[in-house]
Length: 77
Picture 1 (spheres, rainbow, N blue to C red):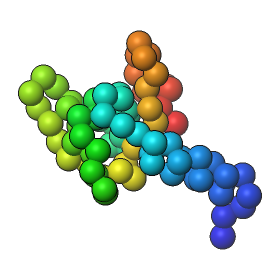
Picture 2 (cartoon, rainbow, N blue to C red):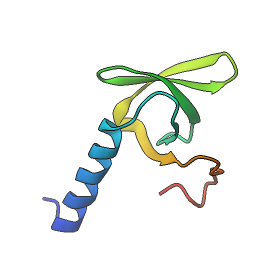
Picture 3 (cartoon, rainbow, N blue to C red):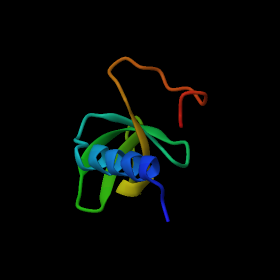
Picture 4 (tube, one colour):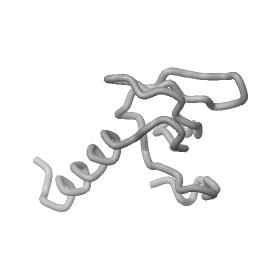
């Protein structure tokens, strides 16, 4: 059973994932950082290096990086 603050945080995370679009930089639970090139129903096609794309489940998104924001391990929560 989840307590109220945890439920609220999970709802916010699910809303954030639903709003993701191509062109946004994201950090995934496994530590990959990339740019979404295509959003599908259950997955994202993400470019992790020039001309290198992987397909990753939507639920694996940890957070979205803002424009110009550098990713660091300390910031990923």
